[in-house]
Image (cartoon, rainbow, N blue to C red):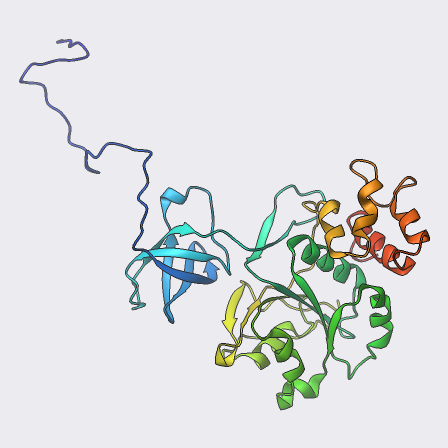
Length: 333
């Protein structure tokens, strides 16, 4: 048996060719300066639909991005076949810096964050006034997530023909929330102008339980239609008809809406209370004397003295503490 050293120079040594090529590995990644810019419209099993110059193309993430993923709303750089022709595939080589990120977790003990959408600037929280019954704890959780992400919340109440909106609105009066109340006739007659006005020039993500009329509302706002479902008469819960988030343009380039799948839980394990206080500018200065890592709901919290001195309304502090306490309560409570 012949043995060779580490650097054999015999002519009869056979070297097996590398079928994948002999290009050496390198840590230097291409810059792709000629890549086209696009927006991710939807993600489906590793394939992403991206809008590039008004053309929808299908792309996949480049290996060089590693574990960094792209989500709906992301601005990305794309190379390859950008024709949009069927069965063609482009490649996403860069995900641009995000202006905002809306996150949630499966529950309040799950450490894994799920990015819902990127680069939105408004969160429309869609809630039915009846069929199914409204769940204020779910609204609270969505509000906390919106404040944490720096999104402007918009409360959209549907099915006002079945129940009045005033009792629920009184619960959030101290938060000074922008809201819209709709009913069945608004959808049938196209009378959703009051909502369009609030969406103009914005990227708005729609969230809500299944069956609250979220996708029906989106269909009334845009030209592209998505399937809708009905509420189960036994459980009182909606059926999931939207299975993936989808960004849709409003007519006349007036903005974007992002329809997301109906959720039955909205975990807040990732929320830092110190970020939520930013949504309460009348209370935020009062935290200057709070102890380090103050939860803003403890005996030595400086906000109590701040409110007692007349700098803010007590109802505002109560609302802040109710929102911050949502992590300690189940959504159905």
